[in-house]
Length: 229
Image 1 (cartoon, one colour):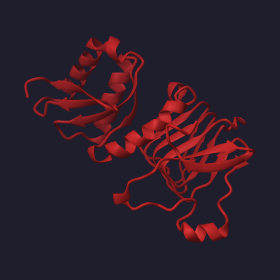
Image 2 (image 1 turned 180 degrees about the vertical axis):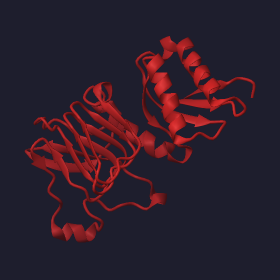
Image 3 (image 1 turned 45 degrees about the horizontal axis):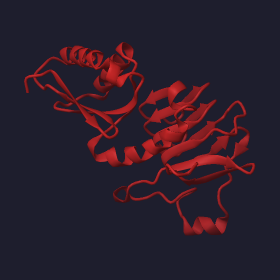
Image 4 (image 1 turned 30 degrees about the vertical axis):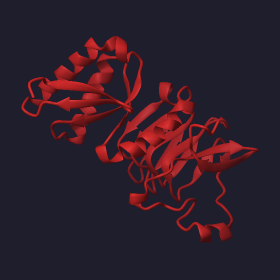
């Protein structure tokens, strides 16, 4: 490979092929240069990103994302991994109806929230990772989690009952929208769907994105699809 970086277009956004023989900082500079050249094409775009060509540490991926966002108007909303592309693209359907409420003004958290940690946003919140048991996320707007939600999540924390909470998988955590708590299903239904709010699928089954929203004064949960609204 002679070029420092090659940008390829994918359905979820962009795929960067990086030269394995160059120093990492040379790669960073080359990526920034490439995006500046294509600035008009990517202007104000909200996209996913994936990497190939060389092994990258998590910190290096975040450094590349920060470099792109600091020197362009591109908004990177998720890091795609080859084995998770299909799952993340399904969740990307959520972004279609949450774009104005979440993506454009959201706080983005890259990486999973740790047990005992609290993440707050006065606007929307996008978590690129998991929210495990013992972790807490709160947002004034809607919340999108590109991972598993097992902790506490409150959307519409200033009383906005039009906010939503969406995730690849929702486990046994506590959900709240505005002042309304999600009330789990009846005990007899739990026995049919063991594992908390929703039956956790096996990894090989993949995930069906779920959304919690307010309907008729109650928080309901249902599969999230582009035809939901």
